[in-house]
Length: 130
Image (cartoon, rainbow, N blue to C red):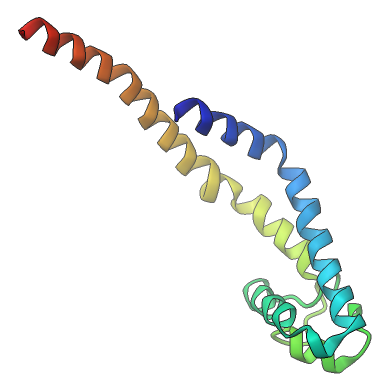
């Protein structure tokens, strides 16, 4: 468990740039799908609206991503937002990476390491009592 957790922790830090790029590409694909077929994109619009509300942004690169203002109004918390959600999400991720990911995972890894050291000592001590 400890080794697996440590490997995932290291990979996620090393690959954070890839995650950022995938996030940006996903937003661009979602906007593209909405522009192609806005009648069947209700779920995508709702997802973009949640992201828009959180980051105070619109579209991937701004409200101008949408081919018509109706899509921008449906898919963004406010079509007045000029900043794109791709950039705002990446900035948020970078600014909060330490507090939201690194610190809690470091604490969990430290706890797991302590358990790995303490358990064998306890087992030896119990074995001596027998």
